[in-house]
Image 1 (cartoon, rainbow, N blue to C red):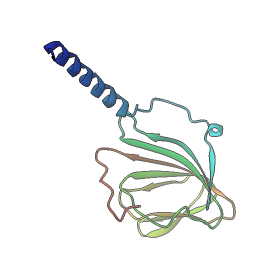
Image 2 (image 1 turned 180 degrees about the vertical axis):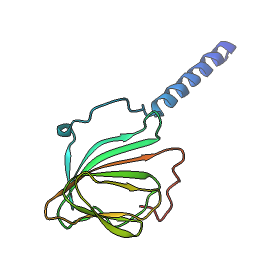
Image 3 (image 1 turned 90 degrees about the vertical axis):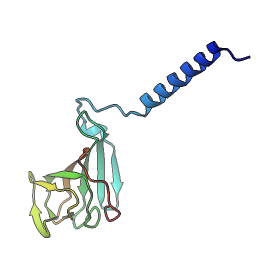
Image 4 (image 1 turned 45 degrees about the horizontal axis):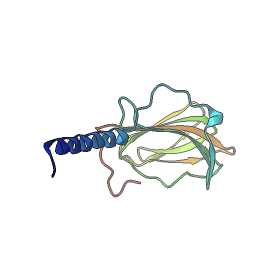
Amino acid sequence: MITVRDVEVALLAVVATLCVIAWADESPVQRSAVFEWNSMVEKATNAGSVRSAFRGPTATLEELEIHVTTLSPGHTPHPPHTHPNEELIIIQKGTVQTLSNGRWVEAGPGSIIFNASNELHGLKNAGAIPATYHVINWKTDKTPKASPASK
């Protein structure tokens, strides 16, 4: 025979289990950190290489993603595209051309490129040496949902 005490214990176990599942599903937010260059594993791509630093939530962003790309001369990382998140690209080395507001613009070391939400943009190495650039993109609660046309 099931007693009231048995039901109470079962309910307590269910509640405790649900709390553990909810806690485990929450990704911890990124705290202050240093991402050392040598600790970022370099992965070869068809157009050069990429080093990922971080991708995840922060205290104020749903997602922050940071990586460094090295692009071989004459190459593009992908065709021009759009995406709902905003993005900064900071050129470290080399010369690139970026598609911004419908026209191709040249950018060299120290230049900063801002790609707005859902605006067509692209990038290609326009120089004779590999181009290295840092990419920082983010999503907030105000970031539009991805459309089927976004890549």
